[in-house]
Image (cartoon, rainbow, N blue to C red; front, side, top):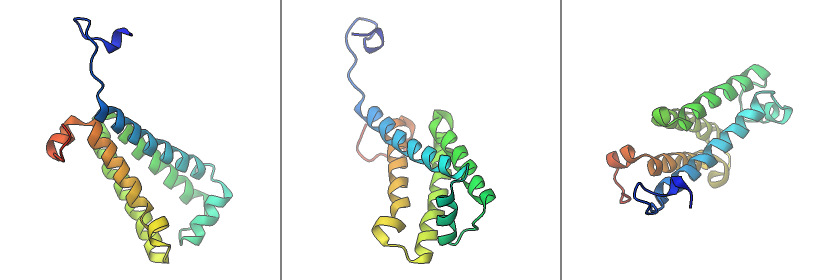
Length: 142
């Protein structure tokens, strides 16, 4: 057993399952947005074409700006002291995605609400990894 997994008196510490689940959920959100930003920064031609189909300007500058914006949001979300602010910014970004898909009439459950699903995952991950947030929004997990 490693030193990190034992307490000062040598007894193993119990697993903090909410923290592990929260970090896992947050990791999925971070990985998703890093992938999204990584496709927008070069920007790849399919990204520019898709942006045009969604009603966004079909230029590299807009794609890069969205990629940089997402990298900033993810950096805030990944850092514990600024995670709450990052979650708020991610929610705003996802709101734009939901509005874009609703405006063009994308399928509801697969496209339009996808931003809602990712937002719930982001907030759920933050809630599970932040005792302070669980104190503010007590839904049953201690």
